Amino acid sequence: MVLPLPLPLVPLPASALLGEGRVPVTESMRVIGDSPAAIQLMDAVAQRTGIRLTTTDAAEPGAITLRVESGAAPAEGYRLSIGESLQIVGGDEAGLFYGVQTLLQLLSEDAGAWSLPRVEIVDAPRFPRRGVMLDVTRHFFDVAEVKRFIDETSALKFNHLHLHLSDDQGWRIHIDSWPKLTELSSASAADGDRGGFYTQDDYREIVAYAAAHHMIVIPEIDLPGHTHAIGVAYPELVEEPVLNDGLVSQAKELGQPLPVKGEPYLGWGVGHSSVRIHEERTYDFVRDVVRELAELTPGPYIHIGGDESLGTPQADFDLFAERATAIVVEAGKIPVAWHEMGSADGIAEGTIGQYWGKTTPEGTHAEEAEHFVARGGALIMSAADAAYLDMKYTPEFPLGLTWAAVIDVQRAYSWEPTDVLDVPAEVILGVEAPLWSETTRTYADVEQLVFPRAAALAEVAWSPEEAPGRTWESFRERLASLAPGWRARGVNFHPAPEIPWVAE
Ligand code: ACM
Image 1: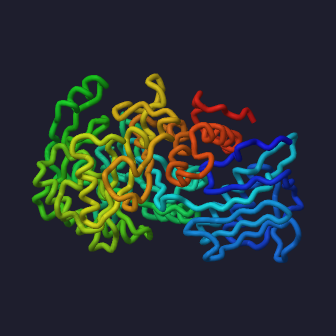
Image 2 (image 1 turned 180 degrees about the vertical axis):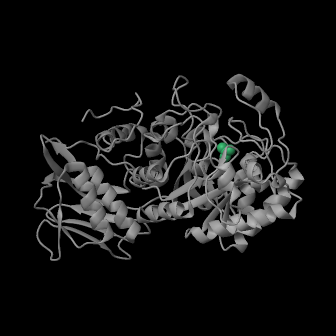
Image 3 (image 1 turned 135 degrees about the vertical axis):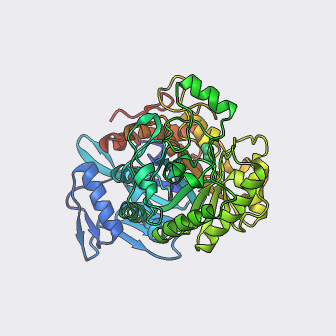
């Protein structure tokens, strides 16, 4: 069989050397040991090919060795060798997991026979932070759907899952100390669709599943704006809605209702809600929610929002930002916030900013983002005109929005996260690709918007700029080869016409 060139890998590995010929994958192939990575490999091979590999304790010719060897590769890196023997050596457990994902992408079928190309790959990520975000507020996605999202994004070597758990339209995580949040504020969603929430056990299940896929969960409670739903449960915590011109004209255009305090909000408008900044009870609330989330979350981060607080006077916003970031620190976690919180001088030292302005910054966005760095923090890049997965692929695409840009696959691929802001490259932790869910009424809709663009963003985050093949032309060929795997797993990806998709 003719080897597909370039190698069918996304994200592109740091280095790969292709040998001659292929190694057949059959029932007689053994996997040494029964580590979690070995089990994940055997399960995924069985799912993809129908071939159930078995384990062996002893080294035998042709068996697949999986092991962790500290020093063999940098953090999250691995070495993969397919030849007379097959070996994946991770520099750590995550590296071993990523080596397995690479091997799975290399599997291909020809006339019913499965095989792997002979290769030597040495790989490690460019950025330590490779995130995706799922907005479960505008529309709710259940535990099984979140697990599917984890399966497919971790296979692209994403390692952080940011869950946007509260917004104007609904509150999605049970908080024992404020039980009315889920009693009264979780059933609603955008457009009058069905809401929902995670029990604390559901959330623990998501966190554990993410950890098994080497993803850290970052829970977000959006404050002080995007808080209309809090007021449905606890009206004493929020202000009256503030209607801005954009909100009113958008509501008219879309035929959506305006927010009314204490009633569920089903529209898409932003910037109308605020918690009460000068009420001590607001900080009791924030402290309790952050404490419970911190107890449930083994990862080091809690995201406290901060975006689009258009109805909150600036001085109040700044005061809130200082107090809220300090509360996260007191709870033993690192605060993460959207870049607007950088307008507050006294945000807690070390707070991480998430930049969601454009690739060419507008207004005060760059300045706000840069203030996180001045406070000893760092930045996650989610440039809205490149990394936002909820933008349309084309102006006519049925799902998605257009306010930031129309983002085809090439646009999602072709940007450089360290070129956006005037900060030292080392403060850029990496990239996060958010999926906002105003227009995604089902999980199938989510997959249409996320795939294939998440693969482009995975490569921006993982692959060294100088790796041979780190080009759009190479990427579109390699991306095409992910289609058979996606089809086999029922992923509802958008077959964007820019990509020469492989038929089967
Ligand atoms: C955002 O898109 N409002 C962070």
